[in-house]
Amino acid sequence: MAKCKRCGKFGLFMSVNKIGLCPRCQNEYNVYIAREAEIFGDSSKIVTETDNLSTRLSRCDLALQKLFMMKNFGNEDYDLFWEITKSSRIDEMIDLYAGMADDLREMYSGIESLIFDLIRERGSVPKKLIVDTIQNAQQEAGRDLPFDVDKSVVSILKDLEFDQKLRKEKIKNRYEYFLNDAAAG
Ligand SMILES: [Zn+2]
Image (cartoon, protein in one colour):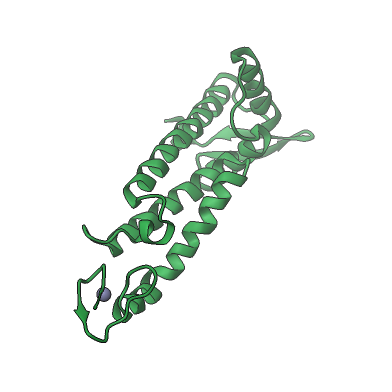
């Protein structure tokens, strides 16, 4: 006699699928979780493949959000992630992605502060100076950051502009970044 691993329902003619779900739970899975699980898969792939810090952080956050949805679909008897992968438990995955997101966020805010400090020091900066400063610091420290500095700085500057913390102005032939008054505080 088959018993659904998630809702515990059992019956003589009931069938469960290969991830232990009865038809009703499978239907719920299809409606609420299938697309989210797919987004988790895509995001975790991008997290490992991209060399852009900003992209990696936002995809890591998205993957984490989807993991929580997958966890909530389960209960104390049913670990959806384990049933799908047979190799990792959902809580391990959540720890892994939460740790990764923390590390990435730390690097991201490190670069943000560096940008703000440079602008406060000089009034305004071109992108190249920010990139050079980080690359010199990398060299001095004797270790590389695990992403492409130029690409990541471009994205972070865009994020900061979008949040209206910085503004870009063309001075002679190049763009310079300035602090907006709110950020200068
Ligand atoms: Zn069920």
